[in-house]
Length: 281
Image (tube, rainbow, N blue to C red):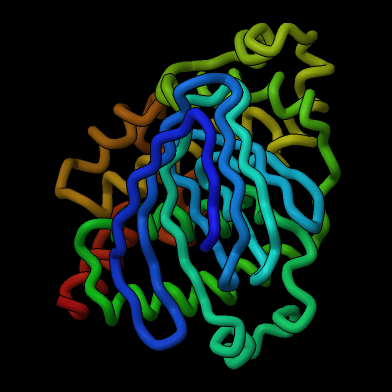
């Protein structure tokens, strides 16, 4: 990838690679409100954002990326990432050679992605939580399996084209996204989030949904559940302790919400994820 950055420090690590695909982790730290990153994708690129936010612009328009969302890049496209109001981001990046991606049976592969983001819907949240939980322990075989799933799930998640949002709206919502990421376990009211953008709650609700693809409450709840899923996958802390630590007042509400998003109870999810890890060990 050819690239150029301004007021931005970047660290990268390769997690795994095979014939036609690779996966890596990258951290971008913005040194000023004008920080930006420009480049050109030399492969089909799918990025799972795990921390921070940024504004991405390429051939299919602009969108804001935040934890729990997927960035979708077409091979050969020039792009720009801006960090207006954001300290940076951390992400897991999947890259696919165009001919390999086409062989996956991806119907949209020939024309490229129609949009540059898969919003943090329940299916995408579940996928990004699993990726974050696997970080640091999956081997090449496991990452190849995940690379195939990510490609299929990303295409399935973009059947609906999202509403367009402006760069000004994205800057106004950036503070609320950062607040949710830092204080997701707290009872954040809509009025508190709206105050960070200096908007009325009604106007903020409309603008946030246009920028993020979901409502503030949906994003807050899914942020809690995504973090809880990562905690379940990475250790053996009691489920009740994880529920309370991630903003849920009682266990029953946590179990119900978790089951709706991930299709399994917290205990069953932990057993399935850890069993997959042992099989690949």
